Image 1 (cartoon, rainbow, N blue to C red):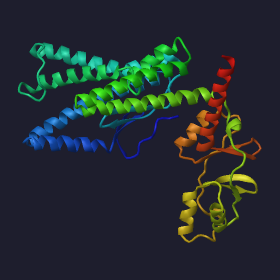
Image 2 (image 1 turned 120 degrees about the vertical axis):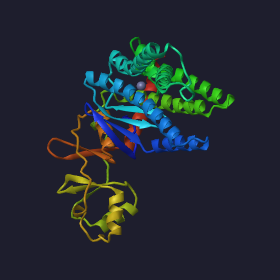
Image 3 (image 1 turned 90 degrees about the vertical axis):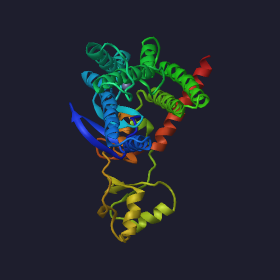
Image 4 (image 1 turned 180 degrees about the vertical axis):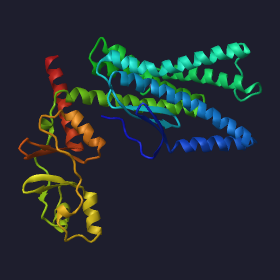
Amino acid sequence: MAAPTLGGSLALFSFRGIKVHVHWTFLLLVAWVVFSVSKGGGGPREIAVQLAMLAVVFGCVVLHEYGHALTALHYHVRTRDITLLPIGGMASLERMPEDPLQELWITVAGPAVNLVIAAIAAVALNMLYGFHLLDPMGPGPLPARALTLLFAFNIGLFLFNLLPAFPMDGGRILRALLSMRMPRTQATRIAASVGRMMAIGLLFAGLFFGEPFLALIGVFVLIGAGAELRAARERAALTGVTVRQMMRTSYWAMEGHSSVQQAVDALLAGGDHDLVVLSDGRYRGILTRKRLIEALSADRGGSRLDEIPLLEARPVPPDAPARSAFANAMAQRWPLLPVQAPDGELLGVVDAENYAEFIMVQQAREAGRTRHTD
Ligand SMILES: [Zn+2]
């Protein structure tokens, strides 16, 4: 399944067709910096220096994400966008190549960018001041402190990202290396369990040493391992499956000349949330429960269904691959994916529930088969 789309982001700029967004929660980080500097007795100058350092640090994060995105572009994989969150950056690739070697290069490119920045900072620091690492917040010439910050931060980011745990790059690198020797699902399973063990270690270390940030990373890794595992199982269960195999053929449909009131009555009588509106038996569009209720509250109970703005979910042919067709429907926020025969006849629909049920059934069959052959 595609990466979750985060709401509430502000577009900063775009390079090579890849937009960089900053998530609104980032403002909390800025506010926290301002607050903690002024609480420590710092004036506007200190606040400006700290915010400049924050900008430098996140500039490095953006370059790291571009490392992934531009390498992906080299393999003709597009990146929807790069989002900056207070905990780091996220490049939303449209897909990850199945070829483990390509996945490996795309993943390695991010940390490699940080290693290059750290090397440049170290060389510059050495040439200008001799290689003395300074406290970036302490006394000393500002350029030397800035170069130290660049060096230390990028080394830190490099090492942190190499932790062999999803959602860090190290988890993907481990999976890609394992995938060269075994099926991808098995490789993901091993990489995810390594990540889980690390997450539990981080969680305990964080609690034991009173480092909430470590514990928080542990939680993220636990969630990340679970998500990767689910995605890999889903991919395995749906390989070669078409929408025809998955669709349900019983769904709630009404002709466009029916009234909103009739649809509301049918909704209350039970059944589906979302209504397929037909015109002479042909698919026209989807009327979601939300729009139906809105029409009712706008006092349009007497209106015909085809007078209400319908959601124009594009139908797919029955032989479309289920996984990518459904991922697209989710990305477009369609509650139903209509399946239509070439002659225009509506054959069925796929929704999130029967998608999940199909995967459950496939996995149960798979488990049954392996037990029988043991
Ligand atoms: Zn990365």
